Image 1 (cartoon, one colour):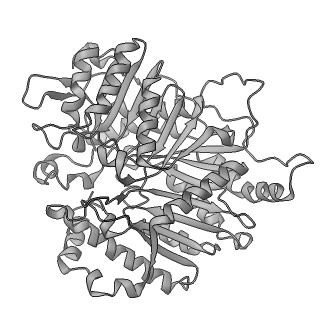
Image 2 (tube, rainbow, N blue to C red):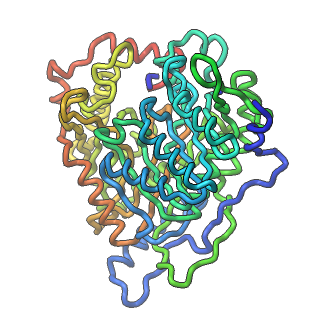
Image 3 (cartoon, one colour):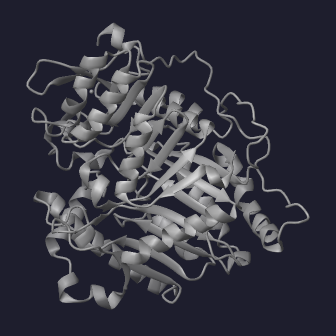
Length: 529
């Protein structure tokens, strides 16, 4: 946070340069139309207020039209885990999981996958994790050693395990930077949990704390097109990743770079790797990308919600044509217009270090009654952690204090409230950590959000330069979905309390010199929080 083949296996991933660009279906109509004569005036007003957002978002990223009822919002870690397991058990054709890591002791999740694969021979499994995090403990038990037996049992034709390695960590830097902090040079950070034609987007990884007492956000999309789109992102990054194979080595696995991958290994030729990855991933995230259309069912509900599928792949794209930062920039810039003076927003990030450009945009909006939610030091996953990572909670405290200083200097102290989320104390009985991230925008005259952003991004400088992120921006005129989004943001604040500059001035909140020095060193050597 401060901050790898056998030809038979390798043939599973093919993204040749000569293949036509993958195309994801743009809906025939992507703007909110004027409601029928029986619709309420408030609905008409809401649709008109959304138009300035959607007209530009259509030019930035692919999107799909759905009905609000196709978006389900899960609340708790337990609900997320039980829903994921249920979807896996009911899978009929495919399971694809993109995550930073799978906990090395997640035997129940692995057993659930095994049972489905044994009972349903048509189901195929693809898992993508990060190579640095997924092998950090090797030769001791790791994500890679946990997953390798799946390949041994079911074969590479049905199970594929991929691990992405950043092109930013090579040579002497990779050799000498300690494992605990080398993740600061870039990670596979997407959280995509797809089964058949449904997908959960989240910021949660797949380990016990994220299933029990680590609060995040989890949106389930029941949409073939949205699921297929993110499946292609998953496949694209997998074609640029190491393949895991079981072995008799002490670690229980090996990482190989298939010749059929879409580019050379990032460890051997990082420059060419980026060039080739630009061709592969740039085509996937273009707003003109399309998916073969599926025939509409006559009884299907009316589409009233646009889901913009966003990706931040800065380390893979040169030039950078990522869509997340441009999309959020457009939304916040639009909110600066006087016509949105009656709007409000809620922004949350468990690791509070928003990119400087994002802080400026948030504080430049015309919105009022705005809220920022972040983790209390006692709800930070690194609280009392060993080594350098133990300095992180205080580092984020310092950054939160600087944010409030900026709020005050911009004259927004009466309009922007910072809240810290705490539910007990980390590593103590009933103690939780906070890992949620996202944005909600409520339009003038409304009590619930019409726009929300959900996914893996932490909205930091490293999110916009180093990590691979996947997100969805929901733009809706559906009353029930808006109410669910409103309930979500209010529910997250149930364990959050306001903090002020005076609170940060207290002795117990003062940040030591060693924390400030550590932050400076990380920035000096090129890493990021």
